[in-house]
Image 1 (cartoon, rainbow, N blue to C red):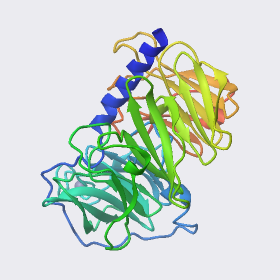
Image 2 (cartoon, rainbow, N blue to C red):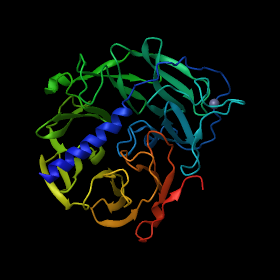
Image 3 (cartoon, helix red, strand yellow):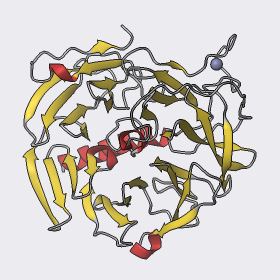
Length: 390
Ligand SMILES: [Zn+2]
């Protein structure tokens, strides 16, 4: 019973802060600024459409489509403004170099009015309300030249969308089981032309009704769907855009924040219980490792490491939360006490993993990334939490 209650608490926390960020909830007062200054100078020699830049970032602690890695640097969306950092650990600044701009209204180049951004083919994209529609916009990598590409849906229809590999996948409604939805269809549209959206799948075909879509996201050939029941909590299933087949449901109990889905498996962590894996090939669930420890943890799965980051259970807890680092075989590599002055105790302090660093935040909603740790210190038993920009 205690475990169940703990799961309820963490589910509540996760939903509470994620709702604040719910996609496509744009600022309604947005005549978007457009100016026509010079195109971004591209000196990067690699592949600007490397999938690492265009993939759906499943393992971030912040909202989906809030943190973006590109060949030009790192972009972070906060309160409708885009922040930029060239190396990930310098101070994140508003993406605007207009002379005399105070960077505080919608004439600023960094302003989007959007709650999600994405990168594709040398441009940044976002969805914001313009007139009476949710519209797709593009801007240059330096924040200049905001251009409306096309309308996506009407304000009455609403819109929840996620980007991957140059496409916007969207739903004309809201997710998290909010009421008032009228349809069950997921659409897809290219960001790079003016073509209309096409239907990818109707979730009704797998018994998912209106208001039952708690979350969906695209990942490579699949679209994943989370549903919720008061008895079993969260379950995830997927639809293959290549074979048009649905998978079985996997009852993870936990929501996306402690779950990883990849082509072969579903991985998740149950607080007070342990780590679990489900294999699509065998259709079996296995408990693969013990609990991290007492307390509430979110878990981020990455290529080499798994991070379990503790949530504050009370606002003024005198004991700082812990970040545990595991390898992908669930061996504990290291841990660090994250003693930073949190501005928002209900959001995770873990933000994302880069090549060499793990970024932390005192408030994912109201601050750009402001702390980090070095991956080169993992295993030393002496990880230092450092301030970004120092
Ligand atoms: Zn500005």
